[in-house]
Image: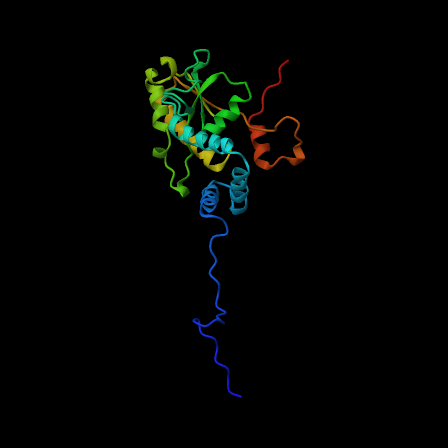
Length: 231
């Protein structure tokens, strides 16, 4: 017997790949795609978020949409310290009860929030909006260093027009954070000409921890930041 002819693509026996449309309606696919753009959100997490929106009532979805729009339209950076604000100046810089001569420098607004939640600091802040990272192309000009220098040189640029007497470096204890701290120390010492004290947050062993579980960097900081016992 001769060989049977293979069915053509025009025949009823076409066994070629079947074209599939989107798994979800276009609007749902779009929502999933947008959620998937968020940092740390993969496709599965994006699907769960999309179905959360779908299963809730319209008021809940509208509230979420309004909150996103409000953040983009109403929130800005404080004209003094670069903290998040819903006006020209943030609530911390606008608070006359804060010690405006004391400025704690942090990398991001979320670091400021973490420090505020301790309730232990009553000064003001300056947010760098990042840290030096040459490998990622982040240079001093990409940060708000010039605004910090201006606050030191011109008290009128600082909250309440108060001269700054102390700069506290509250950068993250990483290679980039330490490098940024050294750069700032050099820059601020030349600007302050000895009139502005420069300190950094203490590092070391957290309360309740054990020496055997601490890494070398933590132990080194604990030794270098040791304090004299009273009495």
